[in-house]
Image 1 (cartoon, rainbow, N blue to C red):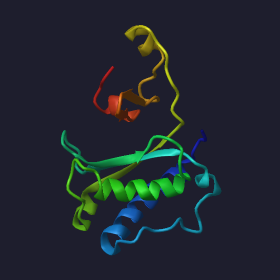
Image 2: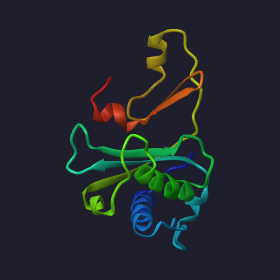
Image 3: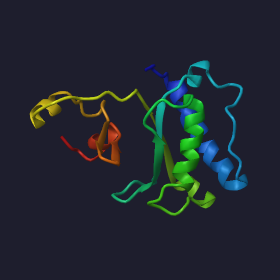
Length: 156
């Protein structure tokens, strides 16, 4: 895991937006720009979330990413951004005309850790809402809850 500065976070969000806009207008995936901070070439999990503005209960427009650190963060951000806009099976592809009303969010993830527990209370004691995301698996099924989701919906 590594900490990002505000400037690096702004860079990733701008990169994600530029990736989407370029792909929607030319069907070309951009490459990392020369000014990309070296730290962003380290492998990391990342998700890109697209929300309509103004935000409402049904504002989600796309969310795709990589829970595991399988690609350099900058490359994973570009790919996740394009796929969130064009490949999320829950929504039709984003149109370029929508981009002025879409907020792009980039969530950089630490590597997942297995949590062992025997009771729901024990599980709850190991999770910090707003910091920890969750990956739940059963058989072939797998779901991910990003850390900010419980906060946004006032879950405890």
